[in-house]
Amino acid sequence: MLDSLIIGAGISGLSTAYRLQEKNQEILVTEKRDRAGGNIISQQQGEFLWEEGPNSFSPTPELLKLAVDVGLKDEFVFADRALPRYIYWQGKLRQVPMTPPAAITTPLLSPLGKLRALSGALGFAPPKVTNQPETVAEFFSRNLGSEVAERLVSPFVSGVYAGDVNQLEAAAAFGRVTKLADTGGGLVAGAILSRGKKKKPAATDNKEIPETKSGELGTFKQGLQQLPSAIASKLGDNLKLNWELQSLSRHPEQGYIAEFSTPEGQQTIEAKTVVLTTPAHVASPLLQDISPESSNALAEIPYPPVACVVLAYPIDALRFPLNGFGNLNPRSQNLRTLGTIWSSILFPGRTPQGWYLLTNFIGGATDPEIAQLSEEEIIQQVHQDLEKVLVKPNTEPKPLAVRLWSKAIPQYNVGHLERLKTAKDGLKDLPGLFLCSNYLDGVALGDCVRRGEETSQAILEITKATSGA
Image 1: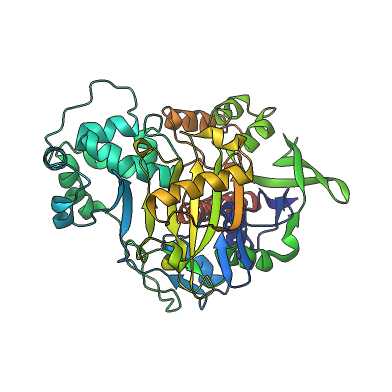
Image 2: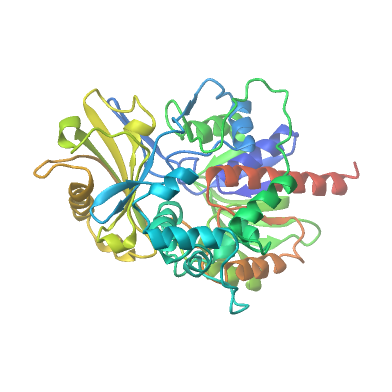
C-alpha cells in the first residue's frame, strides 16, 4: 500500500509529491492528460516564446526554494519591479498609482473620489449594514468609494480572477484586506497594526535562493513550464501520465482504493492517504459516493471560460513605444478584452528584434459568451480592442496562439467560504483524504506551492503515526 496517492500533476500535485518523495515516502502521482504542469503551458515558435496559462509568479519563499531544489537556480528571470501598470479609462491609458503622491495626482480618480478614498482608508467608512458576506464591489465601495471599486479594483479582479466584482466574496478573494478593515480603524490603521503581528519569513542559509523584493514578478528562461518539467523529471516513474481516476472508495481496513483507466488497461491502487489536486468540478463526482456533502459543495464553485490570445506586432504597428507591465480594462469601457500583458517588455528576449509580444485575456465571469466564438472571431475581437488602446489602425497581427480554457479560474463567489467549510466538514470522517487546489485560498502559483507543502507536512504526520515511528 502506498503512503500517498496524488491525483493531478498540476503545480499543486507536483509540489506535494516532490516534498513527500524527498522524505522517502512511497508515492504515486497520476495525471489524466499526457503532460504534467496543469494550466502551465509555455510555447516557442522560432524566437517567439510565450505562455498560454499563467504568465509569471510572485516570488514566494516556498516557490523559490522549490525551484532551487529541483535544479533551476540559474534559470530565474525577474521583471523590473518599477515597470508601470496601466488602466484604460475614458479613451486613454492611465498609470496605476503605486505611491501616495501618485494617488493624489492620478487622473483615474476625481477630486471627490480621492477624498472619499482617503477618508475611508483612515476609518471614516460606513459600517456593514448586514451580517451577510459582502461582494468585492460592496466592500470596496463602502470602504474606499465607488470610484476606487469601479476604476481600480474591478480591472484588478478581471486580471487575477477573470471575475465579477458584483459576485466575488470580498472575504474570500481579499481576505487580508477585509481583515485590515475589521480592526475598526480603517485600512491604514489595520495595515499599521498588522505589521507588528506579521510573521517574518523563516531565515534560510541557502545562498542559492535569490533575494527578491515585494512587487517583483518572475519566470524562467524557457518559460514557466520549466518548473513542472523539472519536478516531473525528479519524480521519474512515480508520475503516471494518461491515468484517469474512475472511482475512489474506502479501504475496508485502512486508507483508500482508487480505480484507474490507463493505457495498459484498468489499474487498482491502494494508498494510506489520497490528495485531490484537481479542479472542484473534477473532484466533485469523485467524492459523490464517499462524501456527498463535500461533492455537492464543490460542484457549486463556478469556473468561467477565458481565452488567452497571444498576438505579435511589428514595433512600428504600435502607437507609441511600450514601457510597462501591461494594461487592464474596466468593464465599463466597452472593451471585451479583460487586459493585455506587454510580454516582451515584462520579460525581454522573447521575440525577434523589431517585434512586440502581447498576451491578451478575454472572457471570464462577465463575458462567458466568449466560448461560443471561433478562434478567428476571438482574434478579431482582441485586435479590434487593441486598435482602440495600443495599435495603429489598418495593421495586422501575427497570431501565435488562441487557448480557450473552457473552465479557467475558480470563482470565489458569495458563499465561497461557507462552501469550503461544508466541503472540509464532509471529509472529517475520511482521515487521510486531502483537498489541495486553487479553489481553496489563493489562485496564484505561489499559493499552490504553499498548499502543496502544507499538505505534504500533514501527510507526513499521518504516515509517521500509522507507522509507529
